[in-house]
Image (cartoon, rainbow over all chains, first blue to last red; front, side, top):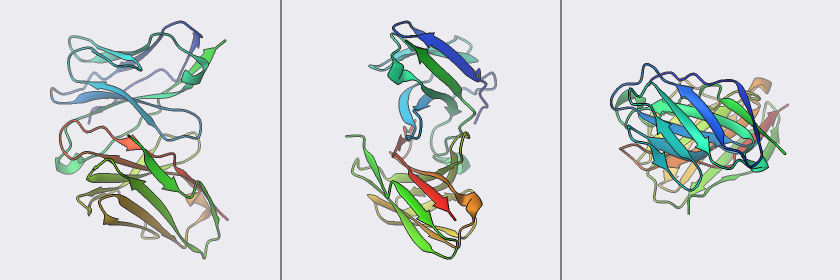
Length: 114
Length: 113
């Protein structure tokens, strides 16, 4: 699975959009981009994933560049409860020797301020 | 319902004790996972079960023994642990095949004295 690079920390004002970048320059054609977050001392929470097209759900939007080498997770109206570590993970379809494996990087600590 | 439950929430054990961690899901997922997370570090995969059979063991020491008695349950048996095994142990589950999304439980925080 491709390696990802994220900034170690970011700040955001409550009510504003939080834009979290992720670089994955070695991504291959069949690898998906996943985003999870982990609020302090809780289990990781799935946010969103995508392959090529931009994706949106009730939690966030995922923007993937045309060359797929980077992506941005957008929380449109950040709240204090969005303070967490956000992980960007790239992985292929389940199967083969990498079956089911999520490889977490260091992630980005997002702090939302009042 | 995307809930994975784990018991106990907290566990303190001595190095000579035997204990078990339990994980349960009722989403019909046929893949289940154990991860270990040390303080201020990302989760690391330990084991993967697919259709109740062990698919991946990430070179985990034998003092950790996983078990998947049925499609809804996953156990992690602990024996003769070391203090450095103190960590948050996370269970997850997912469908099998395709761009699977893993759903995590809240974890068991283990302290080995």
